[in-house]
Length: 499
Image: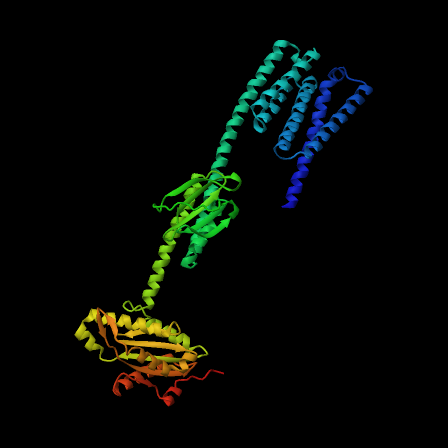
């Protein structure tokens, strides 16, 4: 890239040197027109050469002086200098060529006028035409042998030159307006494409993030839509900021929006009395608002993009909730909301591959059919729900409680808690000495618990079977007891690591 830039700069400098030389020749031609017409002698030729060199040095000095300027002034003066050089070269060459080459060479004067219409404004076009016409008319009056010595022919050529230049200038201006409009459309299309790409990127990021982080993802992408800063609030409390946070006025909270689809544009007075505009839209969470801040007026397309981003966020949130709900339904019992049998087997398999001891407790409710028959299925279901909640409260997140089916539950514990599984089972039985209160009734619940323990790696399914057999043994022994699987039988469940 640097090589290309240096090459372009070198070519531009070379072109400017040629311009300076041609302009010098044109100026000297006009100043020494009588000498060139009369076939000047050696002294006159040396004078022309010296004048040419001096004019070139002056133009070069002006160019260096322009190099010290900056911004718009530098560019404007550079354009005027270059255009002045082109005009001087065209006038001088047109006069010289009309004398020595062709009477039609005056048409060269059209070139700087057309260039002015392309590179400069209308005033420059008029000024260039006046300079070219005045120079040509002055040369024509100075040289009776020139084809333009006749006033009528001179005025005619100037008029033709104006007509041709004006036509070409209008055409150039029309083309410029078309190019400018096309450029604006292209720029707008590119901006829209960038905003669409940003929204798509944000949507992918939201699908891969947690529900409570979706607002942060949205706020992080808002500045890329064309805003300087972005904020996210929930119930009026700021939860995320991106971009130039100092731009946001302190203590300002965007209004809550009743319409999820509406984008509210508001004028604010920012720090140091800086005029700001904000665009706010309802966020993906209830009571949340996404806001983009800008010191410039918010364009309609930018506000629309913010609305699209928020809509995608709401859709992503809804999809994430549906997905989480589907996952929960696939792994949990719909009545008690405990882990179901499929989730139990998955967790058993994971625990069996670990390095910690594990224990399985199989809980079989005693005479639960009597509760169904005497209190009805609705009350019995409430008893199952309350029982599951009490089991989870006892474990306090240190194990897994699963509904195996019907009135059967399974508890899985690992680590230190597994080594005291029998005591844990007895603690569970003691906790259920207090009846379960449902439907304004106190219903006693009793259970037989079978416990199987092992050190990993172990066959998880076989361990579950042994816990089930121990629970059955507890029922046969009189119910409401805790039985532990025989140690000799349990030892056969332990696998030997390969190698």
